[in-house]
Image (tube, rainbow, N blue to C red):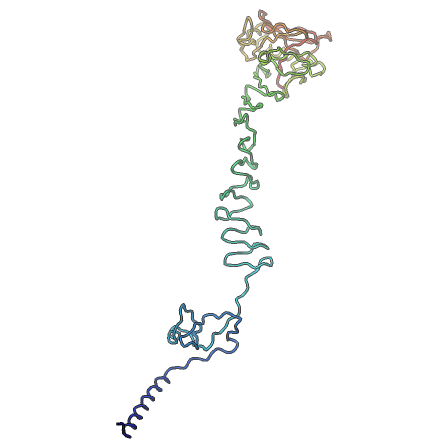
Length: 391
């Protein structure tokens, strides 16, 4: 039974307890005031560094947290207790490039255009794709198949799969080749040494011993005797008013026969050395005058031994020569216009010099059993062989 004394004692005890409890609560510092009105969340801005505290009324401000925290954790972590989350101004808009926004974290501005920095780059206000993931200098290089190549001469772009550089130019590797920074067409699909070889149609030849008649792409041998360079074959170009045996092989070997007007290219007679008459000869060559034939004989020691020294070692029906100078004289015969005679046994060559009898022109000739090389005059209407001399 509780007496009045007990009531007083209990009250005193309860009062002390209350006093103790009040004293403990009052020892804590009250939370700081909330930020001023302009710092309050207006609902339009996004709060930052503001974390919900456990009582659902206050917030921890100015501290970033990953999970909800308590009142004490906020203070211990250096935060501030507020009754509402302050707001911040809206984040600034992205920078613009030519009037268009771009993301500076992944993009940049190039002139008036934006570009993606991970896959593109800017050079001279122009956007380029990276090459294999790398930048390059577009003024002197180009990109093909993720590989960077030098431009030809610093300016010419080419297709690396089908083309290459030759000095400052490009060329197609399937049909052309490069030699000493010059582009040449392949010869019959093959390259050749341009310092010692040439191309005639689809065949290559040795320039020191041969040349090409580009009119029909026939290759001729040539030989130097004294100060002259002579064809080492009879001319085989099929011109108008020329004649040839029906067998093409014979024509190729012994040459074609021409009347004097065709041999001269309808030029007037010339007795000078050199004659200056191109006539039916290839470009760079001319029909020799009577005087030029004489110079040839002087260079080999005179006309008396010319047959042995100038005749080919084969091709004569009787009496081949030693061909000491590579002239390779062959007996192409002659024709009056209706029939071919002397093939294999006699050789007749026109000169550019007309005879005193204007119906004839000077010639040089030799046959199977003749001694040396003779000269004479023949009717201009007849068809004889031609040897040309280099200009």
